[in-house]
Amino acid sequence: MTIVRAVEMPQTDAVPELRIEPLSAAIGAEIHGVDLAQNIDDGLFDAIHTALMAYQVVFFREQTITAGQQLALATRFGEPAYSKKLKMYDGYDNVSLLENDGSKIVVGAVWHTDNTDYETPPWGSLLFAEVIPAIGGDTIWASMTAAYDGLSEGMKAHLDGLTALHDNANIRRLYAGSGNLRDEGVVIDEPAQHPVVRTHPVTHRKGLFVNSAYTQRIADVPDVESQHLLAMLFEHVAKPEFQVRFKWRPGSLAIWDNRCTQHYALDDYSELRRMRRVQIVGDKPF
Image (cartoon, rainbow, N blue to C red; front, side, top):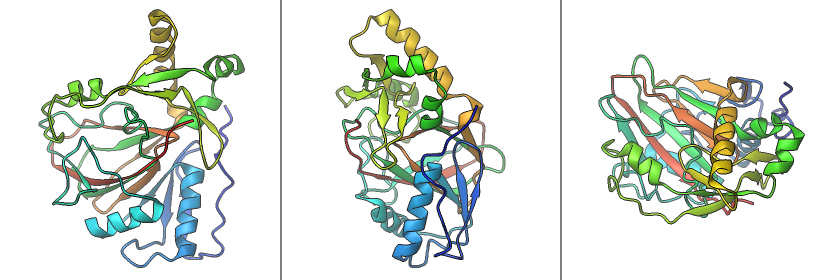
């Protein structure tokens, strides 16, 4: 299987301190030589943004940014989103808290693209690790452009033009009692309808846009056809060839493009894991 990246590899000659280390063939890179607590000039930000478009998720180590600095960095990418589901971090309206000591269900322990139950899902997220267990607590990302490219031409033609219904009923049921939701167990969103194959507004690449957390059914097809088609796609997108796995350390930051990825937070730890997240307002998928 040949993996094609979304855009050309970013050139970093103009930012000599920046070094980009790809982590897998399909997705993910670690960016070295950047202190995000310092002023990020336009040239450096453009290099980071270009790397994000190319690798779909980028990682930084040994960062010391505060919640306010994380929010300010997110603002460079777009308008920070308000989370209707997760509890807020220390009074910030746009910074969410994800905290678990292993005694409760882990939010995110299912393959998902964030908030596809919204008419306009967030286009990106910045997730910072404050406290990490000694063992476990990794996150896996998968490239949905690579997953789409990995389908047969006949299946691509079949999927193009189909839409799917998304809601948050599964999430509310799965995570009731997790301690991270604002109003445990309450379904608050009407279903949203999105294309099964989404076109990225920047790279113009096509990618699969269905996920097992939020996607309920394919619209305008018989139930049995919808069930079988979604089951096949959910299995397909989870292939290791499309993935990168990241081992968190305190001070790690991940930035990912929610328009072309899914991710999965592993539920395999018994110590405190405390993260803070900022999402970026997106637009309606097409």
